[in-house]
Image (cartoon, rainbow, N blue to C red; front, side, top):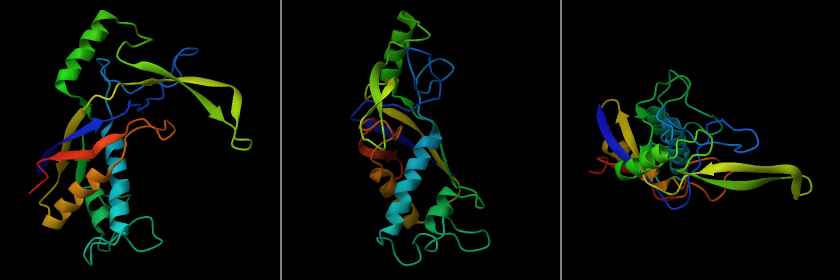
Length: 210
C-alpha cells in the first residue's frame, strides 16, 4: 500500500456545506469536526479528482489501452478489463484502490482557528468564518427572486491537507496519471458558490512524484 500526503492551497474563500443551518441567520454552514474545526470531506476531494481524471482520459493524451470505458457507458462492468479510471477510483461493481482522507487546515492555521473558537465560543456565529450574502435567480426571467436572500459561511483561503492511500503497486503510467489529473482540479466546494474554493495548483500530491 502507498500513502501520500495531499495539500489544497486556495486562492479564494472556501465553502463546503454540511446541510446545517440556523433559521434567520445562516442558511448554509460549512463542515466541522466534533471539535468545531472546519474540514473538507475526502469524498468531496476524491469526487472532484475523479471528474478530472475522466476528462484527462477522454482527451486522448493517454497511450492506447488506457482510455476511458466504452463510449456511451457510464462505467466499466464487472467481468471486463476496467479502464484506468475505474481501475483506480472504482465504481458500483469494482472496488476502488484509492482512499482519500478528509482535509483539515494546516497546523499553523489550525492553532489560530482553535484560539479564535476558544475566545468566542458562539455556537451560531463562528469567529473563523465570514457570512456572505447571496440571492436566488429566476431561471425563467433571469432576475432575482423575491424573498430569496440567503447567507453562507465562507472560510478564508487557508491551506488544507490530508492523506491518500493506494492499494497495491502502481504502474508508472498510473502514478503519472493520478498526479497529473490531481493537478488539473480547479476548485473544491459547492457548485452554486461561484468563485469560491479556487485552487492555486490543484490537488498537490506529495510522494506521488517519481
